[in-house]
Image (cartoon, rainbow, N blue to C red; front, top):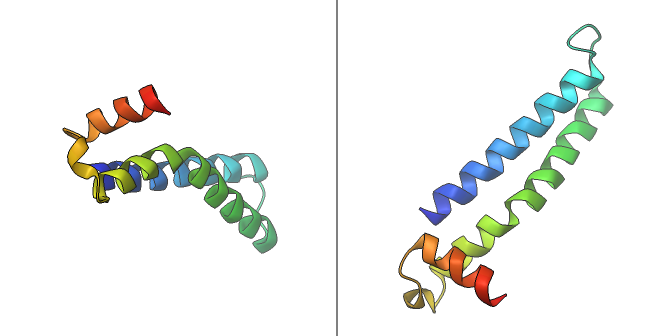
Length: 85
C-alpha cells in the first residue's frame, strides 16, 4: 500500500502540474508550446512532484526498512511519524 501511495501521488502531482503549466503557457491551447518551454515544464513538474511526494516516500521507506515491524500498517506508520517527528 505504501509503494502504491508513493507512486500514485508522484505521477498524479507530476501530470497535474505539467497540464496546468501547459494550459497557462499555451493560453488554453491557443498558442504552440516551444521545446524549451516544454522542457522547463517537465523539469518543474519533476521538482514539484518530488517535493509533494516526499511524505509518502518517507512512509514507504520506513515500511520497507529493518524496523518496519514497529508499525501495524501504513496508516499507523503515518500516525507515528506525525506524532514523533
